[in-house]
Length: 316
Image 1 (cartoon, rainbow, N blue to C red):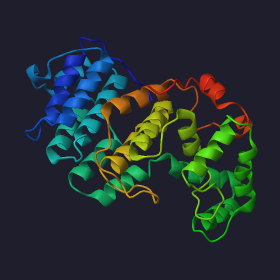
Image 2 (cartoon, rainbow, N blue to C red; image 1 turned 135 degrees about the vertical axis):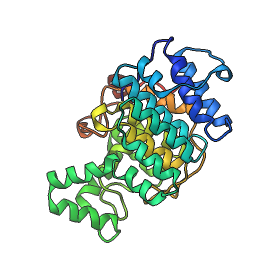
Image 3 (tube, rainbow, N blue to C red; image 1 turned 60 degrees about the vertical axis):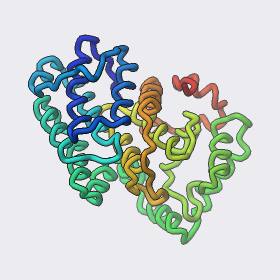
């Protein structure tokens, strides 16, 4: 995900727009203030938010001439609209006005509008169908065939183990200590998850998400899941819809929408500073663990050596 640091003279214009969204409902919540304060720390500014006046969308468009900066601020507007735990119609309308003036067409705004209108089932569908697992299911089915799909579905349903697949993953118990493979094995066992192929296990490609937990060092509590999803977004190329990871995480772990079969949803878990840190950390990673990376050739290599090779810095 492309992360841009705008010129200092541009930042006040963006903050004026963001403040309009934050105060659209007549209040300026602590969560909204925290997000704007975090953004200022990232951008290296120290502007008194209270002094900022509203801005016309067309004026913002004049000072943000390129699409990349425009897309970034619209994404920020979407997050800001949701940071207090719910979206309002007033917030969604203002975000839509700015996006229109900036010529940014985004499915995130469609989802935001549905959330604002409490169309939660439709919003969940919009967000879930963009998640990487949907594309991976089609990709794996095309590559591995109908037999793979049948074995995967029966294992997921708890009807039958795919013994060959499960045995391959369970054998990682014997990978060298400190290796990626052994660390992954320990991660799965510690968290009482299932290995791919075992009864009740998710599809094999979900192991790429679990391996990202191992590579990044993030936990599996709601805060840790938000961290790793932000890390995923940072790793992902723009053409692969990186913001979908953040939308999925915010929906499930901040708005309380159950987006996956194994989670019931949590509320109020998004920390702006942690989100920015994980995004930035992921953006420096030289691979995308969920796209074009095969972990098997490096399963026996030391985890710390792989982190260094992939540009994964220690957590802040």
